Length: 105
Image (cartoon, rainbow, N blue to C red; front, side, top):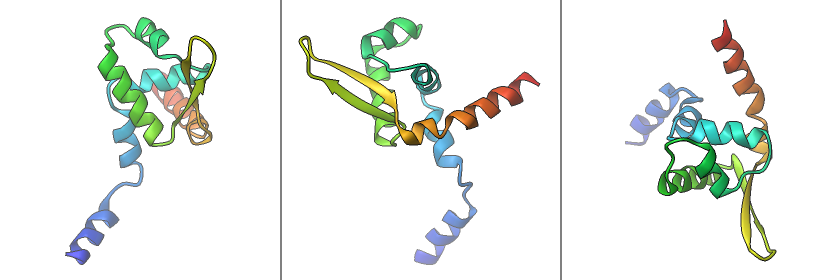
């Protein structure tokens, strides 16, 4: 079995995991908004048409788990949470810019 698993991994595209992660519901929009500055949950709900609490929460959690976003808890009253691009997330900005450039042609 180890040989079979190894050969499957060798045939996978290295970008496949990243493309799957970023293709989820609302993730491209959240990433684009995070490029412009910190995000708050309620502002995302207002700014993304058709978004609901559960789908935005899942997208934020997955982006955070993958290391694209950093979650910052601000301990002021009222307590609130901001999401920012991590260093790993910032490294994807040129990739997205290249995709935008490709789509414009």
